[in-house]
Image 1 (cartoon, one colour):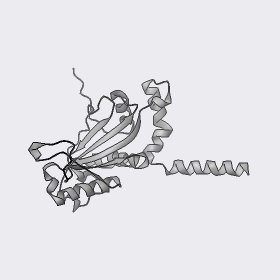
Image 2: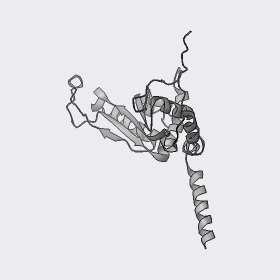
Image 3: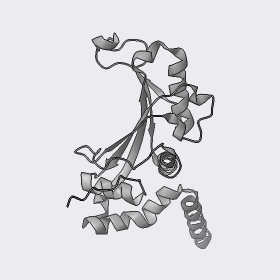
Image 4: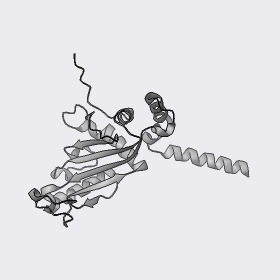
Length: 205
């Protein structure tokens, strides 16, 4: 009986590993240990790890344009596989005639974690970014002090989930990578191992 339970647990664990998104499985099986070695960390728990990804889009002056706001909300849902949440103004902005907490949303966002997060990042890196027009790589300097990374896209059409009809109204996106144990160096190495296509370093002299 004990042997059957052990075999069942092993089988369940194998099935879970097979079901993991490709990038998540790669991180757990290879990249985590490689990062520990490259960064010279004594403890595996100190290794940089992707915790969540926030995909957002502002609507600004077009917040009263129903077609525009519906397109933004639909875009985020389509490319992430998760319903978007509306954001109200956190402060008043006289230029846009926006008052703090006013009714019309100033933007939408989706917060991705776990499997959905890794699936999105995989598609972003390997499918969406190669479709950016005149692409020369993403910035190497868009890290904050905690090692989180911000990436902006001018158009939503680089994602294959977006149809011709969806592209009738164009809008930009901002993608924020929240990284645990991050630093500018460590987070850069993590994303490089994910094959993030960073722009080439300019070597002077």
